Image (cartoon, rainbow, N blue to C red; front, top):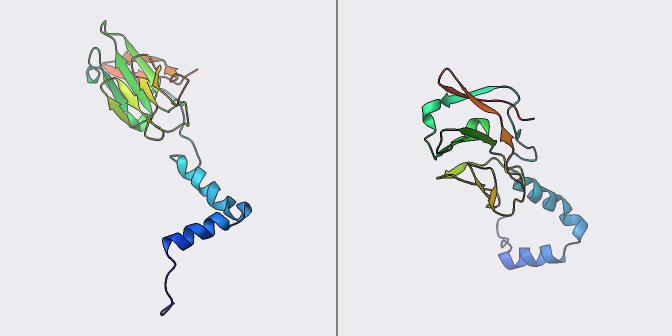
Length: 147
């Protein structure tokens, strides 16, 4: 309203501190939902059908590649063996969107995983990533649904 001063930050915070807990429950619930990357729903941890990811040559020996659109990371050992993992964090089921070398970094709470083994290298996650069957077919990487 014109002519009426707006509340200061201190006034708003003081009012929130004095409000009954029941009155704040809806706001708290919204805050928890905001922690989820998809507004309260979770992304599938594994493909539901075989998925062609890309050319076999896209994953270098000793390296890894993150396929964000499919929530999958594929790595290749020094001997050439491919391994694939779901790139859904086992802590809060956030899709991992960053790969630094062979380390996957979850944007939600900072968990880190080794893309070559799926093992946790930094908490808060405590469970390894889900391994997925992977193969090459006609020079293309194909990942299968997990068990």
